[in-house]
Image (cartoon, rainbow, N blue to C red; front, side):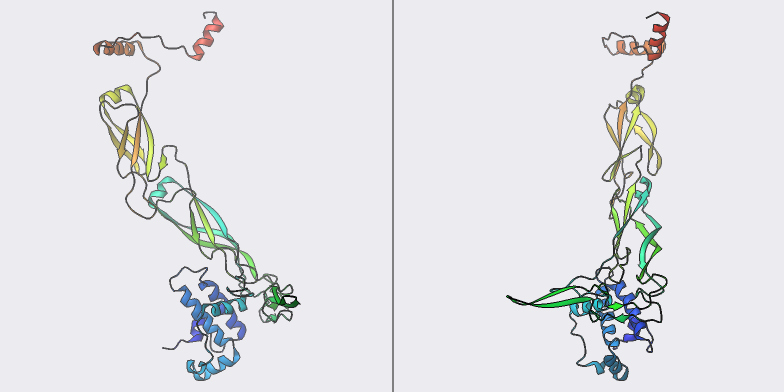
Length: 370
């Protein structure tokens, strides 16, 4: 079935040239290949541009309205991608990609920071982020002109947005191109500025963006939202939005790729006899068996209690490092039992008195006992 150019641009067959241009600007921004990441974005951009090329030309539009697509024989675009960019830049100002040409104006990129906890790294998260961005003025659809007052073609550049100067030199004719200073590259002159944006075509607005934080993300990594940055004044390609994800430190764990590392203090008795203890994990508390005879520096593993990889897969492990602690204060009975244990094991030791604490030393100085 032949394409319906009016349907493609979402306008009525009785639409005015300004309504036609407004619809094209909106759709071309959305499906520009530098912005849209949808698989069919390039084809949609070509389709939109071809429809506008026909309907924006009074002669072609009359032929199309009278004879349909067959009436355009000999008036069709050759399908070269540069032609579609030419149309884009004629509407937005400047020239399309190619020899001696400049890229369309591009808006500024934005970056926002989002903080999550370690447990969220396991599950991933979806949230709505509200950002402040420079957006197209809804009242004038980005044209900068008050509705009902169409912008006039710039006389200085003939609507191209570019001033071309030819000079005769000893090397021959030299041609230079520069942005038109009168219209600032827009190709049109605003006679009645939009009262909402004062002729800029853009306004500062709050914008909600759905952010999907993938499981396994690392602190400092950024999530790209193409085309969600600032819209440039005068038209062009919107910038991108980057959401930088920061993971709050968790004093219990250290992250090593997919594994989580923690340290567990054990008494001499627990290490020697073994024990069943409760340890924290990102999923909640879990029992861990300490084997008899555990040594300082040993590491135990809890399989699957770590973090998932960024692009899906098996979770890492939780590694529990063991630290054997020595009591600093002993009762007489505890000292007696330890000395008995040493004799039982055939160990020849010479017990030493425990060092005096700071308060005990201060007391001795003040009382003259030291």
